[in-house]
Structure formats: C-alpha cells, structure tokens
Image (cartoon, rainbow, N blue to C red; front, side):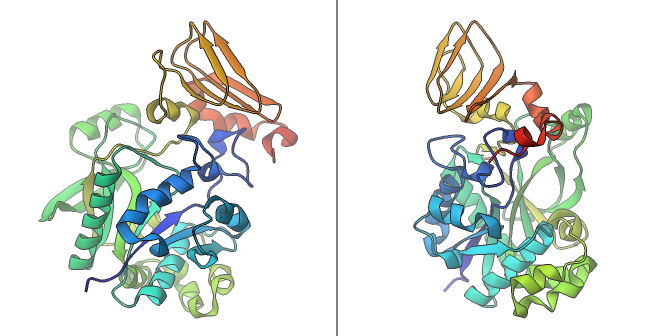
Length: 347
C-alpha cells in the first residue's frame, strides 16, 4: 500500500489587489472571481479526485473558520488547520506537516497549493502533483513544481532547473527573485520556470529540513505537541518557506508544470481566466456592453453599462465603484494604501 497523500491548501490571505470586493472577512479565495463558485471551492473540487475529500486540509487564519466552513459545507471542522496569528509560510507549512504526520503516519506525503489559482487543465494538474509527490518520496526530496512560462512576466520569481534526475525532475540550480522585464525575457528564453508555490514532500522530510536549516523556527519545533497556540506563539521571526527552507536546502528538486496555471493576482488577470464575449469583455453580474472591448467588469447589487470604452476595469460593490484601466489594475495596492480608512477597510 502506498503512503497516504494529503493536500494542504493555503487559504489565509486577503488579496488587497481585489479591492473593493475583497475584505478581511471575505478575502479573495472566498470570492467568485472566475465562475459563480468561490475560488477555494473550485480548488477543493480540483483536488478531491487526487486524494479524496477527507485528505484535503485547509490552512487558514482562525478568523476565517466560519466563512470557510460555510463555503465548503462538505468539509469537517477538523480539516481546517487554523493559524492563531500570521507567522510566515515556513511556520504555517511546518505546522501543517506535523498535522499530516499525526494523521497519516511516518511516510505520509503532502502536496501544498494555494486557494486562489485558475487551472485550465485540471487532469494534467493532478498528474503533475502526483508525479511531484512520487519523486519527493522516492528521493527524500523537497519538490516544487515550476510553471512553464507563457510570457516574460516580472511579477513572478523564477527557478533555474539544473541537473536532470529522471522522472521529469531536476535539481534546482538557483532561485531568482522577481526580475525586471528584460531579465525575465532572457530567463524565459534560457528555460527558467515560474516559481509557482506548488510543493510536495513527505511530512517528516520537511520537518527534518526545517530542523536542519531554519533557525527562525528552532524554538517553535519543541512546542508542536502543545498545540497551535503554543507553536505559533513560539515563532520569534516569521519567514517564508522559500527563504527559510528551500533556498537554504540541498534537497530541493523541480518538476516542470504546464497545465494553464494563473495566479489571478490582479483584476486584469481576469481577462486571461474568465469567459469572454466576442469583443473580449470579461463580465460578472448584470452587465450591458455596447461598442466596448477588452474590459473587466464585476457587478454586485447594481447593473453596469459600458458604452464605447476599451481596456477598463469596473468593479461595483455595496455603493462603492472602482474604475481604472487594465494596466493600472496591476498596481492597485498602492491606491488602496492611500485611501481613507472607511473606504480602505470595507466590511
């Protein structure tokens, strides 16, 4: 019998780049940004054929417990791994690994994904996750899936594949932080991959590597048996899984992934992942369009009529209307940070 496989879905962020729709109480992963279903519900449905519903675990903030259970009524409360406070993804995934180990035994494997992605080819996505989990278990490695780039995008980190290991895996030659556009174009031409944030490993292997290379979590490891409050309370310095573990480890391998992945990072991304009309308009809600093209419109509670415009993002929610361009939507966080508190902190 093969070792049990769990999926861990990271679902704790807010997604401020989707203001005014996303709020602390209704973050990006709980919004119907691609279809009529919340993005988290789509993610779980995509994973169930791989591991079964009972082995899908949701790693999220304690304040989102009720909202997530409402969005996923078929999941039990024990499938939510609740962070009492933010402490970085290295701590969050270390805690998740400890829970997977407790539930699945010493050989239990885990695949980690985010809750707010669009995936065009779900079958190939699951096949790639299964391959990464198999390579990780066979080699005692920490595996990541690097996305085959569709464009030179400076918004992503990149991974340079190194020595081929078989089974589609390569050693990681190096990680590269977000480059400028010219460097991104060069790296795409040289075969670099996007750093997606998809990981696979045996739970025990991650815990061992954290113990070996992540001093920021040394004091917290001993607190794991005492529960989440004790563990997260003992984390002195928050650090990401990339910086705290993967960039320091010699056990990291990468597999290429090509399944129509999109991180849906801004309103403008909906042009790529939503259904369009014949003029390239991606709409949600009651929207009427005439002589307009390549717009993104999201209407809640009100109708939106577009006439003779191009390349706009229009979002209407509870009496607040955002109008910007597709290009400027990529920098929405700087706008939100400068808004009056009553607008910035919509409920």
